[in-house]
Image (cartoon, rainbow, N blue to C red; front, side, top):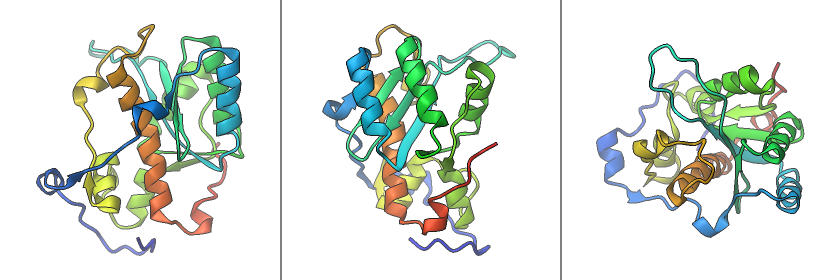
Length: 213
């Protein structure tokens, strides 16, 4: 895909068109890791810290009361090209690993529309992801609307349909044990973001964003 910064406007495929596309195969359940023990966390760090780019996202238990302050993230997920790690932040070891990954300037975190994630991380954990590639901004520089989103991005880049369940979005991410649907949803948010970045084949200067504030 060309990566011109020109002002030429591009029209993304609409929802009706996306529904006609063949399904996109995300990550397989057997490649999702939910580390908890010290050994598992150490293995996750060894894998993730060896990557130049990792897919990234967070999930939080939804709030349903108007005006209620947003929660801290309950889950952080990171992905390599071959597996995804779902970290339940209720465990001290997972929170420690998340902080280390977010602060490591040698690992660029990649995701979609991460403004709210960053705000929650700063407010509730005193940390944020840096350096960061927000793919919504990448697509906007290429002439697409400011908020493309992961489903539209998959349609643009792969010509396929990526399905996300709104019902899973509003489930209890603070639960002691996440079910299989939650794990697949969370893992794919990070994994698919990384797949999109790799498929875009961006020029080198866009793959080395400056550290955030």
